[in-house]
Image 1: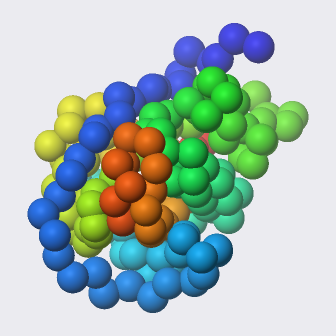
Image 2: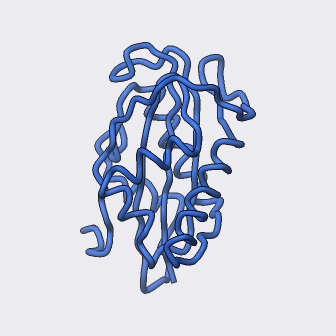
Length: 178
């Protein structure tokens, strides 16, 4: 299937932020990975605050987009790559569609923001990085988005492009279907 023309593919922002203290609770996923639900929620709120400051509507948290974002953050951390496509080369919009389907809907569109930092990043730090990137900024300020899912994970000894460091990876998936 050819991707809908309304899908925006933002370029990956490889960001390594300065070390800081991360005040977020963690939920264990394995010995080397932890989900950071507090940070995920703080990023979601920061995106909505930013949108409101620019006269845009708040995005609803979507459990389906949360699952899509979480799966991608965890996969990147486990496999050691950073990009919108899945490790097997599947386009990001196809991966998201698996969780956030377009069934019987005449309109469906998704976008994605990514970042990683070693060792941690705050919601404010994530916003600073995304605002500095035209593609990520455009995603956050796209009026058509209605839904968002965010996943922040911490990976200890992350392989590949992460160089065995402890990293925090955040995926924000944006969507609209009606």
